[in-house]
Image (cartoon, rainbow, N blue to C red; front, side, top):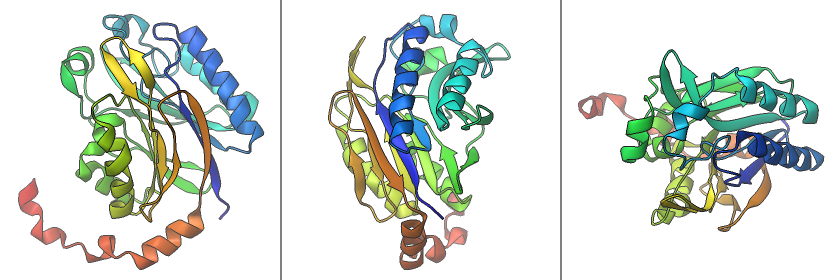
Length: 265
């Protein structure tokens, strides 16, 4: 299988202004596609901004709302899949969601964050109830988590057991939790034998100071790509050959003894 060139857009865009954020996305998609990317991944709540307080409910849209349709057109016009974070309105609730559209603009998956972090998120969102959401991009099985979700090893292991090759994690990670991006993400990729694309916001926003440090970590525990603290568009390859080799060498998933873990609930 050929590698999947993946673009990581580390950018906080324009909080509170989805129209301007769609322009940022369109420009990034054009650049990524020109460099051969088949997939572009944005940060958590990219379409609206994260620190927008009561604006969450005001700016929330259905998955197939006007912004969703605009992203679909961006994906279609540049011929690449796009994963973007946004506040989703559904059945009277608002979810912190991430939606994946294919290079033809069709929806491939929509994931609702299951583990909400802090008072702001718990006051603003309803948690999702589906732990493993997957789709196919190219010839890879792609899964989705959002930010705090990936800090629970059970979530990532569930994806590994379901066959996820590349885990997409839009995030809004702030100071002083740099160690999550620097240390935890490569370990998660190694212990569950997958690639993880962890894509953060950058710079100050409201009460938060987003740390950047987006990365693409491989199943061998190596960090293939690493951003700094500012705005960046990173591109790297997710290599099925490395996945197959690493999974053959590393015995974690084969050596598990699930019968011993039932008390963990």
